[in-house]
Length: 358
Length: 158
Image (cartoon, rainbow over all chains, first blue to last red; front, side, top):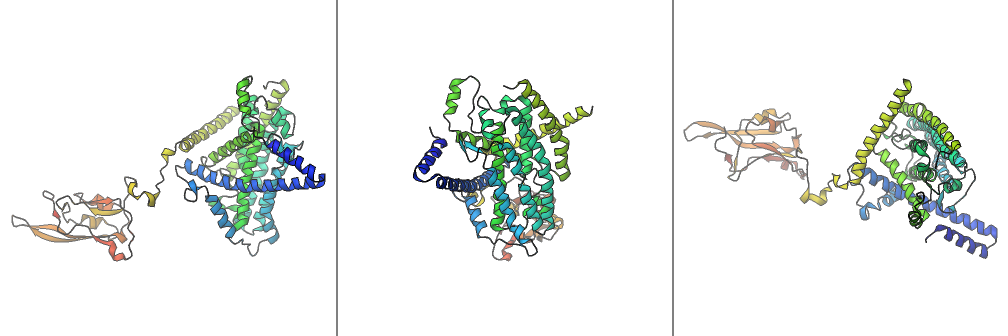
């Protein structure tokens, strides 16, 4: 059976037998960096194409279908176009911060990749406070956006950045509380522990209605945190002409664009890990034959399948729901999501203490 | 009481959002609903909307006869002088003079496809065609004569 665990063990064994431990570690770091960058590039191309195709089919259109077979190379062509473009910096902009901002946003996205388990025992860094790390680092991306908006010396950019600040700070709360429900049930912040605890069933099914509510709140909150429609007030094409990245062009714009899609992938993979069992195959109670059959599907396929299902769900939201106004956005968080998730976490705590979950 | 309204509001919102998702999900999983026309490739099988208006034409039957009496109602109805009807007087077999159309001039370059001339026509002599590939290199080619040469009015049209 195909497994990434065997591959990593083989590489580690080979490196340790040929080099001394320090150099082997350095080489391993280099391989990880290379893999992360490759993953980012591939994800950027795939997700943008997926978004355009999903959007087209939801709006009864065909979508890109001219470049390559079925339009598969459309995003490659777009990337080449963006590389060729001039990276303009406005005259009165704060040049250092302006050029730093897109890289900061990308670095935050890269840092978030560390604790995610892509397959069985295939994880960059199995940190014991993984969930805390994720919620701490993911809120840093707002600094990059604020930096971009402030440094652009453009009132639309600044407005977009301010909105983004208000939005991310408020939605972080309910996202955090939704994540906490699973932590309460598991009793651990380590992502590998959380995945192991879902061996006999995913939390979405084991945890009754409270976890389903938490899952819905999590999806809404992370859609808001990634600044996507229906919560795209930071970008606001119609009012703010793309908000915080109005002044960006060429590859610097592409980095913001890429970071948006990478963030979607990351939040969806976290959602898949917490609620849908990460790489854990679908196991139903005592159906041993069925469970064995599910075990034959590689864990990486399970992880990617779940993540892409959630990504599809978020794209479905984007192309269905109307956009919110800024006051409606804050109403939704402070009057609806936050009280509901506070009540919900109380409920989950009772469930966990009484042991009512499966 | 407040709590009841609150819960009602939340469930109502969720239900209405799910209704929207059901519709778009239906479209996503039913590619047959796609209405995109891949235009230059499918010229032969192009399907246009029934009410699409491309240009004004005068219908002629197989005997090269049309239904235009030369009443100039269309010319009066046109808001921007697109139509110019030049009339003449035919002599009927009884020896009476009768007004008839000589040349029906249509300026496609001025036309806004508003359909007012078609509504004004008392005998349904003109209609909107669905052709739309009107580009030419010289704009004088856009001034058209709609009644075919040698055509005459159909019997019984007053």
